Amino acid sequence: MSIKVAVVDDQALVRGGFAAMLGLQDDIDVVAEAGDGAAAIEIARIHRPDVILMDIRMPQMDGLAATKAIVDSADWPVKVVILTTFDPDEYVYEALRAGASGFVLKDISPEDLVAAVRTVADGGALLAPSVTRRLISRFATPPTLDASVVARLDRLTERESEVLVAVAAGSSNLEIAEALFVGAATVKSHVSSILTKLGLTNRAQAVAFAYESGLITPGDADLGH
Amino acid sequence: MSIKVAVVDDQALVRGGFAAMLGLQDDIDVVAEAGDGAAAIEIARIHRPDVILMDIRMPQMDGLAATKAIVDSADWPVKVVILTTFDPDEYVYEALRAGASGFVLKDISPEDLVAAVRTVADGGALLAPSVTRRLISRFATPPTLDASVVARLDRLTERESEVLVAVAAGSSNLEIAEALFVGAATVKSHVSSILTKLGLTNRAQAVAFAYESGLITPGDADLGH
DNA sequence: TGTCGCCTCCCCCATTTGGGGGATTCGTTC
DNA sequence: GAACGAATCCCCCAAATGGGGGAGGCGACA
Image (spheres, rainbow over the protein chains, first blue to last red):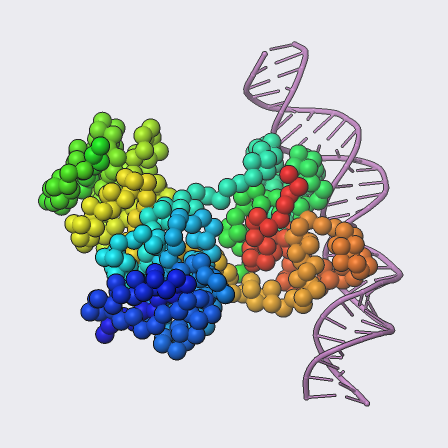
């Protein structure tokens, strides 16, 4: 069975070029074309393509919004490949969150474009190398923490950090005292010291600080099943 | 200038095959080969290759550890492309965190392999389609939340959720009352209701709950830096 | 029309918290 | 050995919190 493809681009020339290029393949049928996002949603609903090549910059409705609308409402496995003229920055993450399966630059070679269509139709995903690079680095580097926040965290002694973690878990001073085998007064003292050093006024803020600073990461704690 | 490549694989046949394949290209020089991770570190240090093709399964030291060691200690821009026989699950994330720039299956075509080497040498990154797919979905889908936690969150009324957000920001009851233009008693009442519904005993736990449940995401708040 | 949930507020009271003073011991550093 | 930070405790006390009641208004829904 051949792959049904729709091409969405506001420039008829570009659209025609891509469509012609893909139409040459035996296993690819270009079933529809659209010139803007609104039309894209229309043709997607009608023709139910397997793959949609979607330009990101369009009048009426941009490719991002159209992608989101199509992916969210589709009741068949549609894959969207975003096409963009140049290297995008903020668009990437939005596009991926919108449900795109691919992100390629328009200077892609015909063979690569065809391969890309086949790849996503097959359930894979495909990104331009520069995009992949960004995605990896975004993924690999732990979320950047605010420098001043970390600096404040560093001012805490080991014991204080330990207490802060317990505070962040929602423990009362007494519970913390028992857990650490020290007196309640000691914990009180530590908590006071923590609040002073971090410039906070109550333990709820300390909990928030623990999460915001990365001392605690959601998932670390268990909320009692 | 040609791209210096090192090939690391414990099977001499595979290693030789890849090396020969790449050696045919004018712009690629295979400068070294290694049969295990330890040797890979050695040859990387000596030959300073631009790109290293690294098998993931090896005796002595696996490709992940070797990648990490090389990338961390290298003082030149070395790119590592991980080679694997089959579709990997947990390896992917580890590999990317270790500093790999690529992740391809060994059934890759010679042309694609050559293209991959050129791509990463050029500063791009490249992943197998299935890997890309996983990475995207990992990136696009918000971290899965514990069902029971979300269920408990749903029991809160809108006003209570509003109050919980304020509590999670570290606000006192009085501050919340002023922010919401209601009396302090009302806020107290809401907080009590929140704690009861969520099965918590104090507001610090409520803050933790807000973060753990995804009601609040680190980065949302500002800690008044 | 009656009931129910939600929001609003009230009183009372025990407990916890946070801030202000300390003190002591134990290392390390100078 | 003096000086210092860290950890451990103590006192007092004002303020905030949490739990137990309850009450009135209001909109939705049966």
